[in-house]
Length: 461
Image 1 (cartoon, one colour):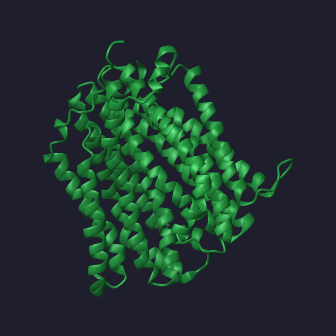
Image 2: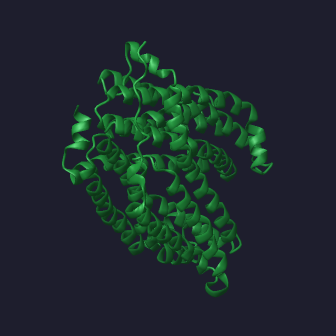
Image 3: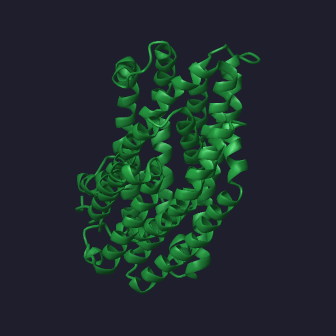
């Protein structure tokens, strides 16, 4: 089959880059979508409405963190199955993933409508914006089934070797979301004025439309993961597959929680330094989001490609895939870091305007910390290779050590010596520590011996 030949037999470097670039473009589109939606809400409804969307987006992030983990597990399982030439197993994984998580998402959507006010209370939402946040969060919950199903389907498609289809329909969702936001917020044309709820409804309509279109495309093009006839029974979740997804996916989902909780602790320290520093750090984080994207895209590509090659028994290619991923990361991430440091003043002013004090603080933060994303990118490639054979626990342990004892240890412990710069040095310190531990795991760990990712054939009827 074509996807198998592409990732298992084709030249490694060009194939890896061609697979990573659509994933990178998808990430850029997704981030741009969030930024433009925020501009629409802020400009059309004001700062209170923008603050209200922040609360809703935080809830969705926490929910999708676990979806990401299970989606990555599905990606690896599909990849290894396709690598072995067992398309039936790949379809069973995709069917079990969709069949298990769609009902869960529907349940969360219904429950979320009723519990949204209580969730916002737990988050300590300011009373002035609570009604706006409630309206936004309720409609966002209704969008969750489409968002989850789109995410899961896109990740399984990437596992099968297809990075183009997810890009096409991510682009469709983004264009619809951006276009519908002002229409539904302001009630343009025949549409009612929905305010902040209109922004969330635009996201819901965009994702449901893109999901239906993507499913139609999968069947029209007869892509490998489509289910027909008797295969539709694969939508009934297989307990053995779900157990594998839980065991492998939960640690990967928890990783996002670890990173987020570490950042919350860092924000507490940053907020103590005053408004200018907080604003500068916020702008720097926005820029770092884009700096990280090549590493994340390469990690996803390396994981899918390595999984297929492991499934095919092509261990001779695994180290070369990893090496190519590292080289591409050094070029792409290193180039972005250099560009940001060269144009740091202009980049900061995009977010901070002419606030001179905040701009200078932002430039200082960027100079001290941004280079750390180069070792971060190498780590993402190493972790992607290791996870592709089912070893997910040690990357979680390493990440926890780096985010808490190392990052927070440097941030708290060196303040007496370095002052506020201890906060900024803590970022590259943690990223370098992560790379060192990841390298030891890659070279000396037993991840190559993992053999529990094979999907057994179901018993004969």
